[in-house]
Image (cartoon, rainbow, N blue to C red; front, side, top):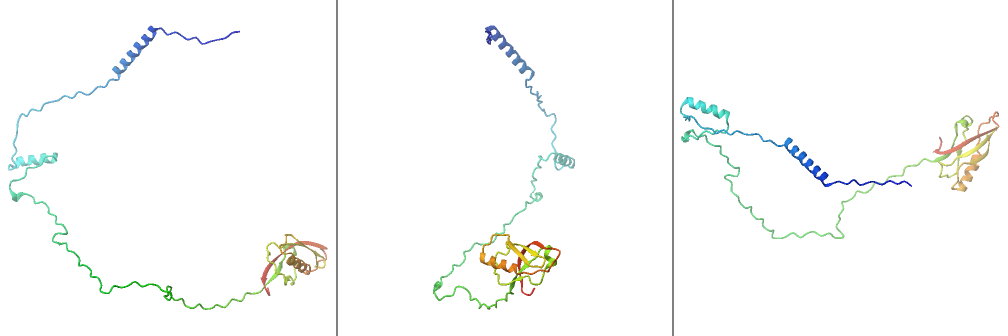
Length: 235
């Protein structure tokens, strides 16, 4: 059996000392290369050699003063001693100058105080409403139930497609599958929906069997779907 193990290398003391010295040398070299150098400013002492006194009364000296004032805004001219040459400063007058603050006269209480009005049962709060003009009810035209024929039965339609005395309410779902023979008689009428009013649906089925269409000898039996709609009487 062969096995392996990691061997720990021994670090002698002289090796650690040598690495410490090498690190110190590198750090010293780093500070030497990347040292901060400040610029050297040479200070010169200004020693006046000649003092020239300028008199504003002299035109030549006054011109030199004006030229110096144009280049340096910090030079403020000396105030003249003569009061007539001084420039007057602007004066501001407030808007309330000359006005006087007075108290308003006090309001006198009335001799007979007004009592508040209270509501009573006889007091009318709401305005009067004009009487309403009675409107006569409009005459609603009578509607009759009429069969709606599909395209394949339009050429065999007759004028007797109205169904009387069948008060059907669910007209949207009232669909019948009918069979018409060659003589134009309805032999079968099968409902295509679940009736909610069995008695009314039975009366409607009997009325469908009583419908008559135009005869067609070429078609012994013709199947079609019949729907219904409410239409005005006389249409």
